[in-house]
Image (cartoon, rainbow, N blue to C red; front, side, top):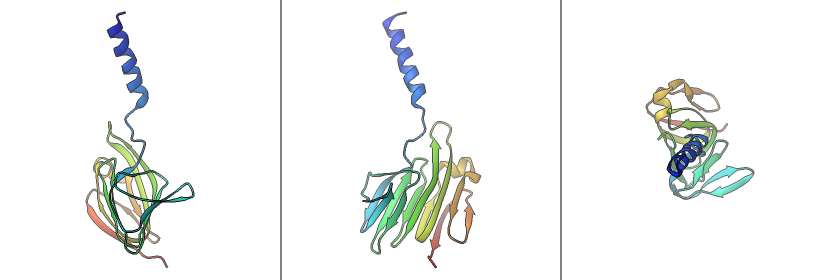
Amino acid sequence: MSWAHAIVLVLGLLASMCGTAADYGGVVKTARGDAYVERAGQRLPLKPEDRVFQGDRVATGVDGYVGITMADETLLTLGPGALLAIDTYTFDARTQEGNFLITLTRGVLSVVTGLIAKRSPDSFVVKTRISTMGVRGTEFIVEANEL
């Protein structure tokens, strides 16, 4: 076997081991005012290019806004005083399949769905304290109030 063949073989093996699933849920594109993530018992301020992950809770203060682009191209925008949990988020860019479950506890959330909702509508769910919505690929706004 030549060196060139050996290198191609090794690169192929490495690529197959890496997979194509994103290791993060999304990327913060905009953050204004008080915007932060709660992760592993810590509260971290959010700024553009920060990543968010499954299990994170994203929150905004009374003057805060945050815009997040998820790996499947779903757009999330949280308004002031919002709290959003990313309960389940998986996405495989190669197959365009995944699962999306978020819970809005308070505030306003604007959503423009991406590839998960288009490919598998039953896999895209938004919950509030009193409702669960299955999404079929669209744009929508949800408001939740703590009682």
